[in-house]
Image (cartoon, rainbow, N blue to C red; front, side, top):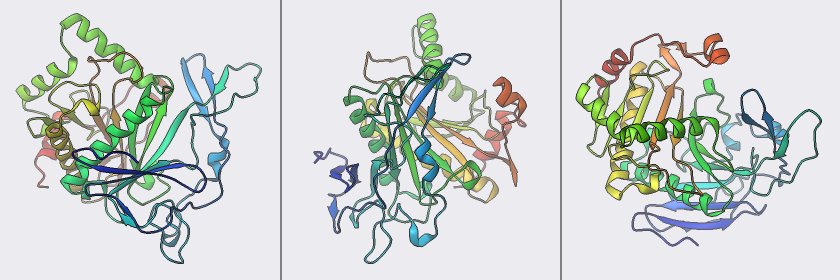
Length: 365
């Protein structure tokens, strides 16, 4: 059992197939049914192969082909189990959010060493994949969480990062949410995921290198100057809570790309004070509401939480922030990654960030 913090409560359980489950609540957690599982244990043997021309690892997990895909409402594996109902991942009870080991993981902490493959550099897919269920209700959105529940989510992301770092096998933790069938969502129940890597992935490594170079040159974190500059310009700020703010960055790749940032430069969510976490949560909620209000539909998006490396020296230069990539560039028009984006890694945007920011800022949420 996890000892409750001043701001949240948590209880740890083991599922029948051996996977870990943690229930989080603003009030003490209470379980009112058995701890279920929706099926037999899955034998995961994830493997990684090195891409020599891109200098990055590629994950292979053949068992994921059988994962649940858009089931009918009565077979929702993320809803609390009901008497006589289909087996699910979660118990009935009093709690707000739940985290459990993914039944179909791309990485595992105990991945076995693979057989050698001629012509390829291979190794075990070491890491961890978790599912974060935002609500017991299958309806609604992440943006529908109360301010207290949204702050709890920030605490949960921070707690999972701390726990994963404590395994001694993890170097980087990425929390994210895919929303909408347009971006490949296979379960409609409001949820996100966490991928924990035993290395620093390419995006985070590049962020770290750039932030380190900036700090060495200027003597202060990039985020400090970025926040000050955006506030001074007044062109792209969407919402400012004082301790946190949201902006359409001046270098946005997606038309309505939105970043949520703490005003004080830190590398990890756990580095934020309770007041800063609450402001960060309110700003995130506001950003998501604006995106849904933009065209009057649920905006399909990818939300990623960027934190500094763990399991080693601290990295005060790394800019903690959330990036939201909305996939609608106009009503009914998707942003597809085409030749220049996929082939060259350089984005083509249809609208200047200042114009997109003005449209989002003018919305009433």
